[in-house]
Amino acid sequence: MKRFFFIISVISLGLSSCSSDNNEIPTKSSETAVANFKVATKDGTVNEQQTFTFENNSKNAVSYLWDFGDGVTSTAKVPTYAYPSCGYYTVKLTVTDSNGKTNTVSHDLPALCIFGGHHPTQPAATDF
Image: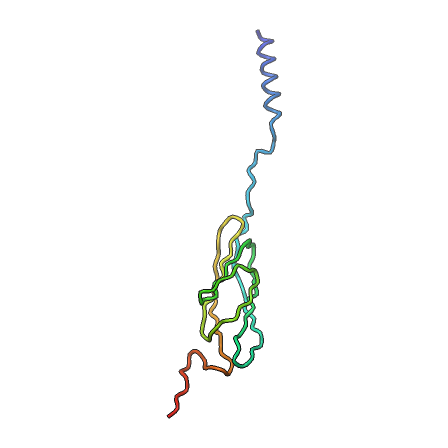
């Protein structure tokens, strides 16, 4: 009887040691995304839209959502955009990391008319 329990114990031990040692659940990166960007302008021409290039300096991001402040959005990493009219716009960049967490940064941007219009904070000239 002792021999029977010994054999069963050895068989049980042998079977349990055959399982994979890789019981760890893979985890995603613990690096949190940080949104950051700069804005560069291209030289404008009279009565043409001013074009902006958004330099993306975000860290640890896997996706990007730009909101240009006028109802237009983009998912490009480094977008270029020309505003259809003069004004001040709040540009927002929301980045998402590999864990699905988001981070947002925003900057106010003046889209100025070049000679062909008036500055958005100044009233148009009035003739008397």
